[in-house]
Image (tube, rainbow, N blue to C red; front, side, top):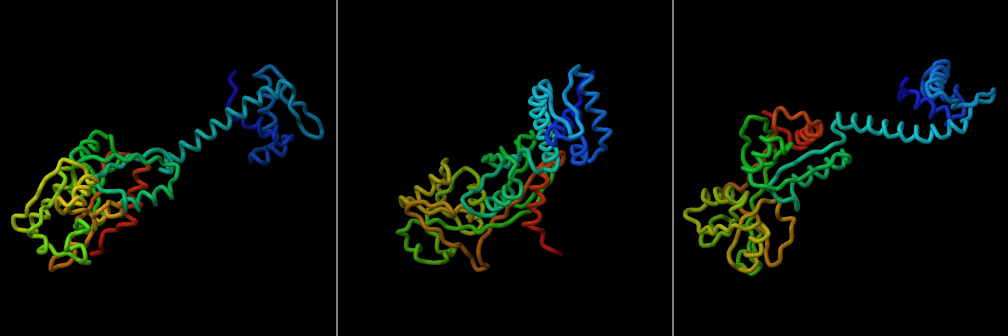
Length: 297
């Protein structure tokens, strides 16, 4: 007949306390129940595990060998059960987050740091990709959540409006406007704008076209970091979301960009699948709701 996990758990406790009575008290069971199970285990194994006396119990040589393995089995199974329960509560496991904003500063970075503080056992996997690729990743369940610029649009799943960030202008250090604290869109009418063809470059281009009549836009199929290098070398100016200003790039300065109504901003939203039952995602969404609540009516 099979040895059950409870046999091993009770035997480990009895060996630890050297007493069936104290082991039973620690486990919250009756001493008679523990004693009966230990006798049952010995019958099933065909060996005596404990020597019993009026002063307590101690392991026989056979019991020492059995308990050496039993401790590892019990600890391993209890760790497995604890990990499974933690994963069910979203306190362990994995969370895949898609994005195309910068992580050098800003709200996404702050949210990830706070999530890691609250749920240190959750492994966060970051995927940086274009908007279209992120949405495909969500559709194919390769991502748990995607953080995307723009107003939320329901795409066969769930969405949440998050934060907004200022749009900053990136200038060479030697540029005449670099001494200004605030730069206005109208100050940039004669500038050449270097924008990446990669996200969020196209959205920044749309904002630029809405703010200026016929601006000179030079599209570059390079990363944000390479755009910063070109600006620093004097090839033009650029636009960046506020989250990107935490990174240091040689030869450039960031300035607040405004029009007559104040700073220009770009919105962010979270997207996820409605059938995603990952508990870690639920906790991440709760954190986002807590940090970025919807404005009251």
